[in-house]
Image (cartoon, rainbow, N blue to C red; front, top):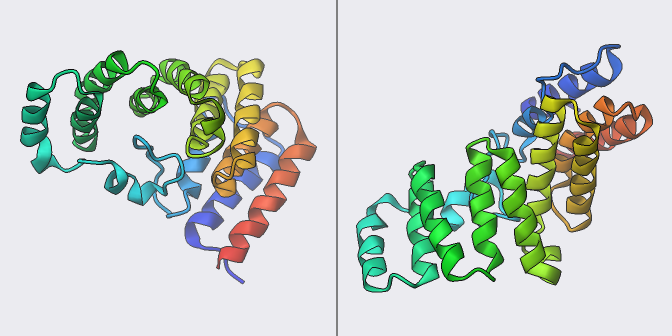
Length: 232
């Protein structure tokens, strides 16, 4: 039985890092493995409110994320400047247009209007994440988790995956074991809450390897290999 192309590349890369007798280089963040292993076979790119969405459907799920709707959304917001939902809609359109600075501006306005709404912190985290501002993203994601409370175990499960990616990126870049360990914890929590096991394991393997936990890394590797093989 043959692996799917993307899966085979990912497994080969992970296998080389684990069993080739060489440590992963400091700049080879596990996030790269996740980009390869995204379930759709495409590079992973998060979008607002996409906790359980697949990468290739994210933008479609963001309300109003169509370039042609920008003028009408801005017009509606001018008539109701204190409406956080309209601010979020304008922000999501800018996000869909890859204008992340403006997206962050309007998500920030939404958060200021409705500070108890976790979705705006989640969205601000996604904007920061997309801009590779991982420390800022962590602050927003953790605030979203705090605001969401028990809801974090449902529709906000993807926040823990994002946190895992952020801690993985920072931990490997700074050679910070505590951040790597936080990444492992966040990814494990994400799996418990029902997020993509393939995505989470593809990152956690690299963290376990860098932390010197060969047994845990090999276990994740074997689990991931079996899952990807079963997809064919």
